[in-house]
Length: 290
Image (cartoon, rainbow, N blue to C red; front, top):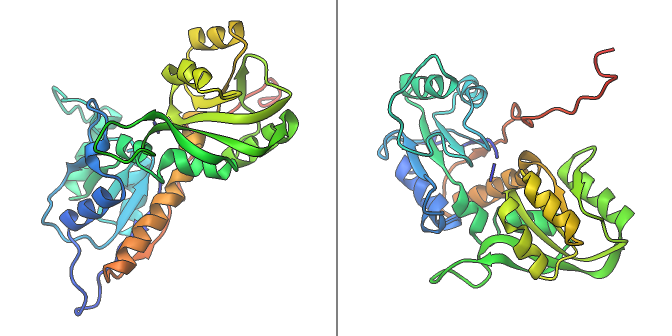
């Protein structure tokens, strides 16, 4: 359930210094870390809470490409959506990409922070921005969060159109929002679409929940083969919009929220989005290598 570049500059002597603890506190206000799934690993992954933050690069994935961009830009902190470490690791093999990532972060004293399923579930997070870009109204969670979080928090979203959309218009809008040339569809796409369920990132397991919600279609990513067959045989339409494309809009959203937080708290912030991150997959057809 796979953002973006910010430089937070503190150059004026009269301006309070921003620390990693301040940054984590800001992210916790934007998307409480307590909302993360139990299996997730969010917050500070590598670094020191007492360090001063002058520039932060934020992206979807903890890649060496992103670290190199941070170093080129002079950033001292990287915030990613997907955590650099999901589970305890038995060793750090620097011949592997994950090992090189950690080695580089430690060598250059880069702080690494993750803001993952907490940003998926929070109100005005990953799923809300996707639903809003699709023009949906009356948006509610597909899988509501447990107490004590607000009723409109949770994983996935369900919304509807004031006027049903023809399937041609719906697909045109979807491809525009996702910035894709095509998507994979399992099951028959209805002639008109009124209600839409979605889950940014990997959400194959919520397909049946989406159907029970009354949605005409379900948009997510990493749809499993058996789920696609289930949709086909149960007169339901499931659309795989890819992990990257369904979460990419959240980059801009988090950027705006961090910028607003900085202004409200008197931080001197210079904000940029990553320019090197790109989809993990490329579309290839038989004519590409001719």
